[in-house]
Length: 122
Picture 1 (cartoon, helix red, strand yellow):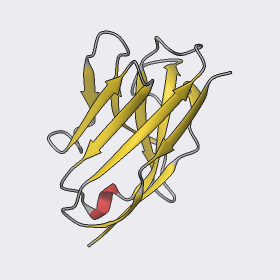
Picture 2 (cartoon, rainbow, N blue to C red):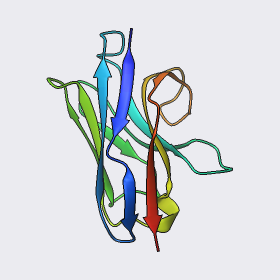
Picture 3 (cartoon, rainbow, N blue to C red):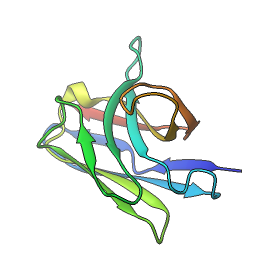
Picture 4 (cartoon, rainbow, N blue to C red):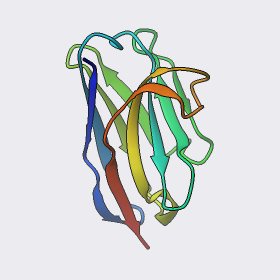
C-alpha cells in the first residue's frame, strides 16, 4: 500500500544546489520517521539525513552537515532534501526511505523509493 517516489535529481556543477522531493502515498508509514540515503557505484547505501514525521527533529551525516537540509510537509505527504554547495563526492543515487527497522542511520527500512540520480561535475 505504501509507495515512495523520489524526484529532483539531475546533473549539476560543483557548488550548485538541488532539491530532492519524496512523495509518500498510503497510510502505513504516515507517522514514521523518514530518511534519505545515497549509494554510489561500488559502495554501500549510506545514511544522509532523517526527520521525524510529527516531532520535526532532524539528523544529518557529518559529510552533509551545514550543506543539506531536510524538511517535511505532512499535509502534502512529502519530504524534501535541499542540497547546497554540492561536491563531486555527493554523486550517487539518492533514495527515500520510511519505517526504520533498526536505528535511523542503518539502511534497513520497511519501504524504499526507486531512487533519483544526482551527478555533480567538478
